[in-house]
Image 1 (cartoon, rainbow, N blue to C red):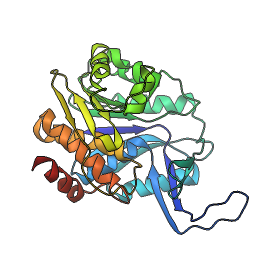
Image 2: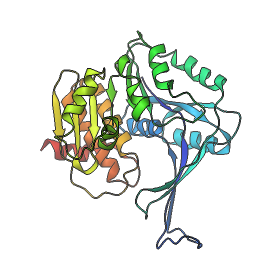
Image 3: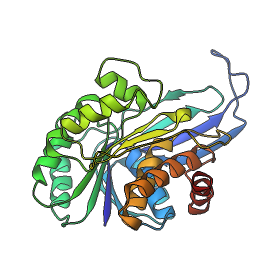
Image 4: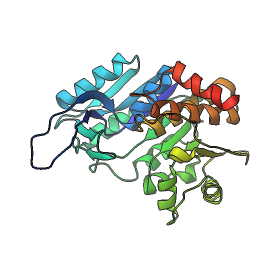
Length: 302
């Protein structure tokens, strides 16, 4: 079974506004309300690819209830922990203004909420996969990813970490099965800039030395790179297509990689599935369907 954790999920209000002007009343030309959060995105794409999974995390208030309803509507199993105070956040994303977002804060977690999650994670069994993805609320300790991995040490659970800076670096000593920084996040870790696939390899090797088993790096329009636990190196340019919505593309890559690995236990296949799923989501209004992923995968194998 695959489990995903989203510590600070959201309702994403995605709108298009033509000729946006500050200080004026602006009206939308399109609207979409979706459940948001990296772990939730991974869960939805996994379900689309036929991989059963359970979405874990925290919700609060009426927005939290709507997040749970929308996640369950996708067919995913949702086991969110309800927080007593506040509301799950609403994130506003302006499609017509590239990269412009207003993200909410989310509820304040209490120690008892975190303990509830830890007790649920204690029930995971050998062979399960756990995806820890995204940022954490300010009320949560920065060591939470590392604390979870240390707590589960010895249970032979394959853990995926998709996070930035300290959240990522602090877990490497516990040998995560997969980490997936993008090129900008990789550059931030090593205080440099990375623009091409060729520039990724030395830094991926360094992350492996520090403990990561598999290092998957996404480079948006430049494609992706994988350095696997056997030392094999895979790289591929981005498939051709029309960019529609880049939100969730990296999460889709994680889901595709896991689905591919679970299908064949083969890293070459897993890499192509990850690249296909990430690209298919970028070419879609929402997260990619199985048919959309398969269509892109075919172009990589011709």
